[in-house]
Image 1 (cartoon, helix red, strand yellow):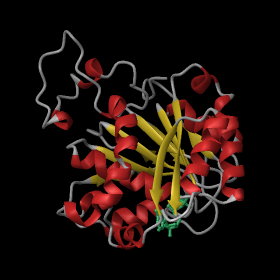
Image 2 (cartoon, protein in one colour; image 1 turned 45 degrees about the vertical axis):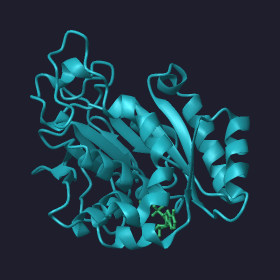
Image 3 (cartoon, helix red, strand yellow; image 1 turned 180 degrees about the vertical axis):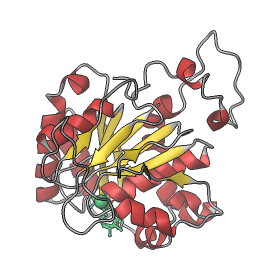
Image 4 (cartoon, protein in one colour; image 1 turned 120 degrees about the horizontal axis):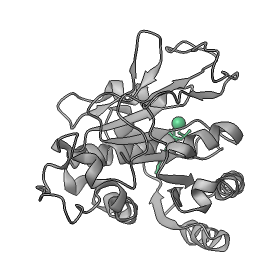
Length: 285
Ligand SMILES: Nc1ncnc2c1ncn2[C@@H]1O[C@H](COP(=O)(O)OP(=O)(O)O)[C@@H](O)[C@H]1O
Ligand SMILES: [Mg+2]
């Protein structure tokens, strides 16, 4: 099961916006996608609640009787939105599950600094260094009338950070998110310029999200990838399987919340940290 995580230490860099769009794109392709929110502010969950029911469905975590977050049964694709400030142990935990990580970077110096620190930390993790989790950056909220996009690309090149281009600053993103939509949910001509900017992102993610069928697999109709029988899906995606349906991911949250802390003896819950349960066969890694 492909897992895409969106990460940057800096709050307000566009993580939730980007994550919602990737999830919506997956849903539009017919994938059974979950948008998992690890952010205490639960922005993605709030956004999902606004989403009109007639649009392609995006699932949230399910929460079991013990307030443990779970990937719902039947999910084939996972997008993880993460909080600002994610680093150290918590970042490493997310990377353990992720097959690809995108770092949204806004043009300011502070945003670049935070993104550089995030990239540096990611690059040192074995899953990233070994190529099992790919990392790329994207420019967010870029004023298309300035050279900011070029400057960001040059910055990424200097850092050896694969670059997916830029998304321009436009109120269309803000308006869409307020209504539970993404640009992918608008009638095509309304967002043509912005959707074109998503081309490189989709191209980069596509091998992961829509891997070509294995040579020995029976032909699969391209229009219904999400309706693969569950038993067939692992054969088509052997390299990417990382987070099994039913896997449990607990979020230990502080402050106002809808989810309660999960108190367990093993592994140890840390204040404001993330706690992943790795017991039995639930997790494949
Ligand atoms: N391309 C864009 N153009 C205009 N506003 C944007 C764009 N991308 C994000 N935003 C706005 O920027 C703010 C921060 O984005 P958000 O995705 O919530 O960041 P994060 O999750 O990293 O904190 C939000 O109000 C969002 O609507
Ligand atoms: Mg957010």
